[in-house]
Image (tube, rainbow, N blue to C red):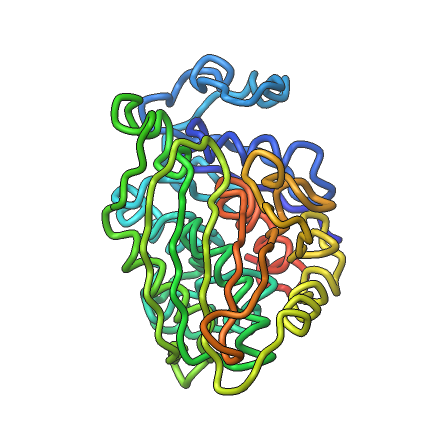
Length: 354
């Protein structure tokens, strides 16, 4: 594989630090440029309040954080963006216009009809939208989005269910970790000994983004999936790992054993291509009656944190319905990991050339 250099926007935040850790010693993506706002001009080791128990890579810690401007990424093949949504809306198009291939974490552009919203195992067929995007926008580069952290694990489980059995209706309740709110998360007086049954705009994002990801490519945009989808989102006092309960109805009878087999055997383009950040088994079904659990299972998989763990697979109110519980690591699979895997897929398929 050709070697690629990357810039990282929002490098000092909690998700930015995940990129730094996951790209350290990457076989063909080298993190060359770190960018930030108030941290610009400082050494990364001074600017970032490092949250991982392991130390920041020494060569990265010595790098100077640069201002978030396209000219500061000169020479890079791609730009990862861990910016907050408001800043991303302003900044990311400037980088795409300047010729950079931008992979964004933010919600700002996810629902634009010309922006692919990608989970590499689920909808790699959406990447050709980049060609239409360049024609429509006049950009020399491109902008690809990755989904909300709650959507990622959910859509990965829904994909094989939709393909294998079709879906009529899905009802989901999420129990989302505090790290999903960014650092420093939720104030302790609000979250300790508590569950907050509302996260602003989250339920709408999960429904809309899931339908787009699971939709099909039309002439100039994605035609969203049409099954019914009801979402309830809750913030719980867990640091990392989003747990979700899922109830699904199908047009015909479905057995728990058939669903378990389908989920365990699910693979996508990253596994076929043996991309470095791709887990060998994207979905792992746990047989324990009380699993998955965030503390025990959030780092599951051959690439820690990149597999979705499913458990408690059983029929619902009748033989046409299934209930299960799923867990995904929200800052690895739900954020930096999926973006890095998207970059690997784009490199393998020739989308990173400038």
